[in-house]
Length: 289
Image 1 (cartoon, rainbow, N blue to C red):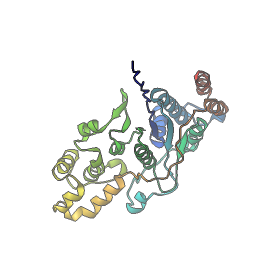
Image 2 (cartoon, rainbow, N blue to C red):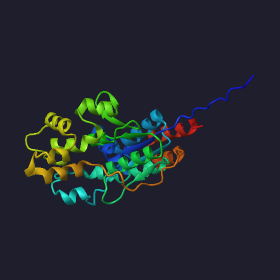
Image 3 (cartoon, helix red, strand yellow):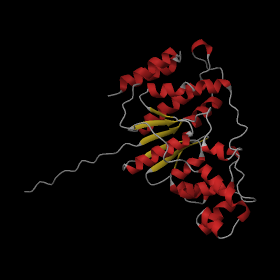
Image 4 (tube, rainbow, N blue to C red):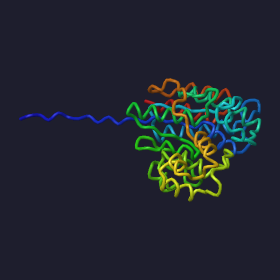
């Protein structure tokens, strides 16, 4: 009797890439400003972000976590090539103070931060997801920015916050359902439709439906321009597309397998006098195998 060789199936854990600014901003505006830490300093954004990060780790069990951050004090190529980009945005001093602290919490958890002058948070998550796909893995991208839909693929899923739902899972099918275009067409779609939050005006008289219709007909912004559409706005539309395109070559820290350091994170939370968070982290440390 011949014995059949047994196969062991290894489930690959995903890489989790988080848009840190997106979720820190959401936490700041969602939680009461009365939440305070050591010395009465503001802590709502820190606490809200920490709770989100721990929930994501618990639910998704990633092999590693990287959190991307904007560098607010340094302009990116987007600001340099389009002066109106994100103009008029102002952040409360209490939010900026906490944005400077949250990466310290991420590092205390044993996770990686990605931040560098000239890049935005979404560039790092794009770079991380792309690198993970190339190595044969899968990625989860947590972001409240719909620009991230351009990253959706058979290996990368977007975790997008939806009020009353939690985090919706966005893949290529959901991008097609929402926008009527393929993920790779999202930068072209944004260039045509415009993006009020980034101060991109888009093509004159073209909204979301018109942008999707044009891209279904021509396939890309470049082919549409080659066909003679919007000749007086070609340079501007190409610029808007470049602004909406995430930089998949943004520099990244090493993203090998990580083991959370909950005890270290608990000590930091205790030092910040965020005692409920510290207790939660201490419980996590005890439950880790």
